[in-house]
Length: 255
Length: 81
Ligand SMILES: Nc1nc2c(ncn2[C@@H]2O[C@H](COP(=O)(O)OP(=O)(O)OP(=O)(O)O)[C@@H](O)[C@H]2O)c(=O)[nH]1
Ligand SMILES: [Mg+2]
Image (cartoon, rainbow over all chains, first blue to last red; front, side, top):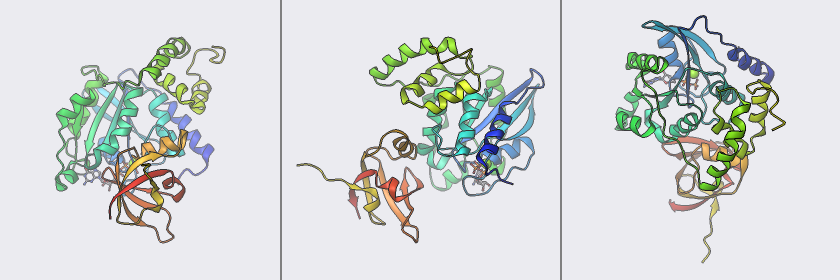
């Protein structure tokens, strides 16, 4: 049964916010990425569950949740709907955006299609503006090879400043490395340091004015620079969402 | 001499063009940028659906479908047939 009614979808989102860790050894991991990049295939392989997969975009419509273990930790894995952007155009995209922004995952795994990296990197850069705790999973490496596309994973990692893991999820290849990278970021053995986008001076100047005003108003889980950018965008919806969900301390609207 | 650009929806199947300008602002512009429709990017028109809308475009190695109204906001210069 798909979620068709807008308010039901909204409820599913609220539900996912309420992920409560059973104990401090549990880590929350989000699987994000463009549509049809193999997120659910990875989810199924890691958790042993059977999320719907198939070769067309838009199969996953709401967040599915599963568990896996690695070493001494348990991981709660959330399979998000595919999205091209964090500026959503559908409720599915909004679900994904909201979880990455407000679900407070310990790490976000961004699954990209090795055969069209350029297109996928748009979302990657958008996610890295919100969170440092990200891993890039370059999937479909078999397809890339078939199309004679070589991906320099080490170089990508240097350029982006985050761990990069290559996988062929359908053949279960690279998944152990992925699990280990997730573990290492969660326990802070690896601390990703994404390269930040610097905007033209006039925008940066405004950001520097806004950030100190925003910072005291929000809980430390949301990135103030990202909120400042959305304010400059005039994205009223996102600002409403932030205050609705009481991610800010007290009233935001008298500042 | 002033350059004359044409809207992407007027480009024929099989033709390749270069994006010169986006005619929209705000959310619609953001959407086009997210789909890869950025100035100086090459786009090839792959096929039109039977009713003529939407049209599939090859851009940055992936296929993207745009409705006529969306494509009309992308101004391009044709570079090959
Ligand atoms: N060749 C190849 N196919 C893969 C690989 N990983 C996944 N697939 C296939 O790619 C298709 C899409 O996989 P899904 O896991 O459903 O993709 P998704 O990202 O969850 O898609 P949405 O939920 O629609 O966004 C399926 O047919 C998978 O079997 C891979 O590494 N190589
Ligand atoms: Mg899926």
